[in-house]
Amino acid sequence: MSLSDWEHVYSGKVRDLYRLPERPGQVLMVASDRVSAFDHVLEPGIPGKGEYLTRLSLWWFAQLSDVPNHLVKAQLEVLPEEVRGHAMLVRELEMFPVECVVRSYLVGTGWKEYQQTQSVCGIPLPPGLENGDRLPEPIYTPAYKAPLGEHDENISFERTVELVGAEAAAELRDLSLDVFTRASALAESRGLLLADTKFEWGRDAEGRITLADEVLTSDSSRYWDAEVYAAGGPGRLASFDKQIVRDWLSANWDGDGAPPTLPAEIVERTALRYAELLTRLTDA
Image (tube, rainbow, N blue to C red; front, side, top):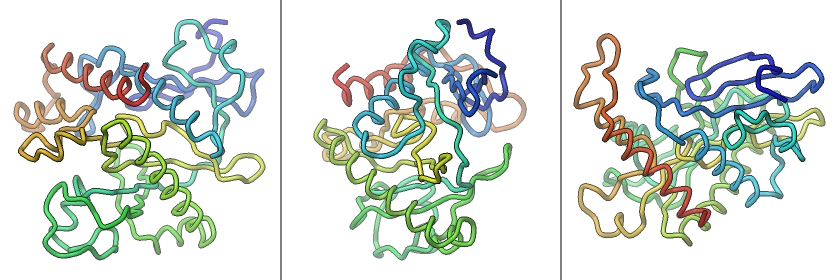
């Protein structure tokens, strides 16, 4: 079977979705090598990125095999040859309009919010914390999934209850914290710190809350090298993702017009970071 046999139904910043009439309720999810930053898809892509993301998601789904997920079993023979290695066949779900973010360290938008309010998503935090500090315990800080082209918005747990109901909101929080805790322990056993991540959940045809999309990848999570972090210094928060791209773009683009083409050196360094995370986690 060829990819041309599938109907293309959607393209996001990174992923492309396809359907096949004879497989109702299932979607082919293809991870491309595209890379985005500051709401722009950049040129060129990062070689191998789609495969790294897919392999890492599949590995994590296997580690979390007791958590319901959207993968279709026995899918290898169905995957078109052109996209094998960076595609997954998944079941369609009724997705919750909430990104389930869990943080174990104060960084990113959480750090920005803390500087203004001494809290993150309505959760009070101890005074005197600095950028990158470990939190007393992981916190659940959901975000509302904004319509395409708009920014996601950090929200309180109470707002989540308004969006999905009290029972589902509590289950999403508890599931996300449990999976995060288990993943953090596994990452630490490989010399990595899981600073934060976002999960996406939906309901399957039987009403079960089910883990969806990618999981615990470089594009959905922030990992740090535990040894580098402990040593301190300006490089302690260097993550295994596209931060190299963001930093270069911030220094070389004012945000007006089309973003500049990424230099070959930036592309290569970013690809190496994606590859290193996969190797360190999975021993692949």
